Length: 251
Ligand SMILES: NC(=O)c1ccc[n+]([C@@H]2O[C@H](COP(=O)([O-])OP(=O)(O)OC[C@H]3O[C@@H](n4cnc5c(N)ncnc54)[C@H](OP(=O)(O)O)[C@@H]3O)[C@@H](O)[C@H]2O)c1
Image: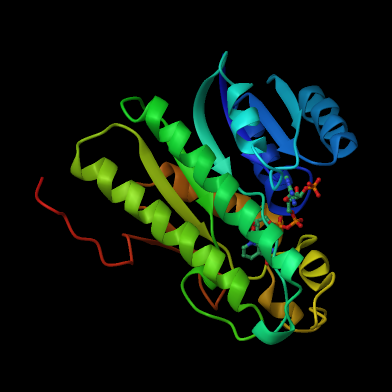
């Protein structure tokens, strides 16, 4: 069975993406830690659309969890993988909670790397799409979140690099970066937890788009032949070619 894997599906952007892809007729594997939320979504999505939803509860920041999740998908044909699970931290570098920063790297960077590379290894010669969720903070450093932004610079450059390598080598698989700006979700609350800076009010209300709007932008990026989908300061989607410098090394 063909499926789309969506991590971080239990709220915000991942939840909206799940409904968006289901409404377009895709079967889903949805993952996050909160199984109760995923179970409710499964019931609701399957009652609205004729698709199957498989629930895979995982804490992807835990050791080997990304490998275990990928292993459990062996029976499926993964037509798209959306690495969306992630969180931020509002704090100056010298006030950052170390455990939170390390967990953020484990989730935003390590788990995403494992899932992306295993997917590329198995699917590079197929019509598969990898969509990794970075941020505008993956292209600009914000003083209140440099560690978070650095994890998203990793996501953006890593995914652009995969996209360009796939293109260079004439592979069928595609890789794309979604770079949202402020989007309504639980992100601000979780980025403020244990954080030295309260995220409430950091961005004006007018800076936010809804998660449903972002899911529509994701769909446009998915259908396009562009690699980067960046939400600009006017809350519009800009579809772009890769932004980071890239060089071929003769071999
Ligand atoms: N909202 C924004 O303004 C914004 C802007 C730019 C980029 N982003 C990025 O968009 C992505 C989605 O965030 P969001 O805004 O939708 O925030 P959100 O509502 O907090 O959603 C985060 C999702 O990640 C999951 N998650 C968190 N920790 C996890 C863990 N250890 N293991 C597995 N899943 C975990 C959460 O589910 P559980 O709690 O159930 O595990 C939830 O489903 C993130 O990568 C974020 O960095 C957001």
